[in-house]
Length: 241
Image 1 (spheres, helix red, strand yellow):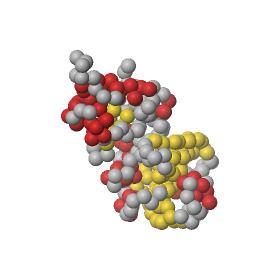
Image 2: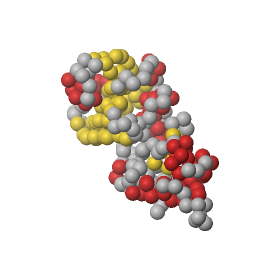
Image 3: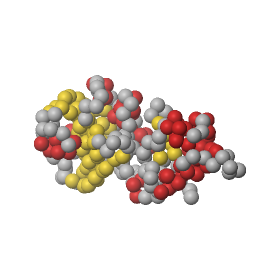
Image 4: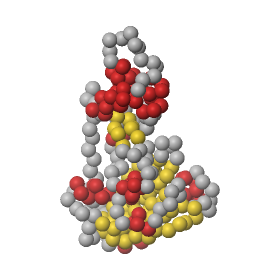
């Protein structure tokens, strides 16, 4: 689309309306990166200042969100149950519950993908993966996580200390979308020992698949939570029409 120079409507509002239509129609899906200001400037035949003004309007209306150093993304394309997710980091969840979490135990190493992991990541059996295993909590264990990461960047041992997603963000790695499965299971004995659980009550298990903007799986994690110490919380906010 080129702006209509004969219209009384300012250029930035014409562009704002066109971008909004792309979002509401689903052409630009929730969580997707939008084209750069340079690309939009060329596409619409206007200056970057005009593009920036149009984007600012949509940011204020919560159609778009800026991520410093990464780009501008679609904030929310539609009101849907896709907002129900455990995608927040454990660190932030614990802060909301008034608990200062920390890593109690950790192991980090290179491994070779077995058949299961090769099928999950769509790689060859024997290909390298990062494996991060951690027990996290406050004074007592709250969760045990077993994380596998595609080696798209170099990761060092300090990934063990705090929030995994904050660490990856500092390395320039951001996720586009997630898939999660949550169920109540009887945790394996070695995991109940790590969580210091000595009973047969079901525990909360979460499996998470984390993808980049090219739909490439970067992270696969299995997490077991002590059901007596952890509560699942979620909040939903919708963009006003």
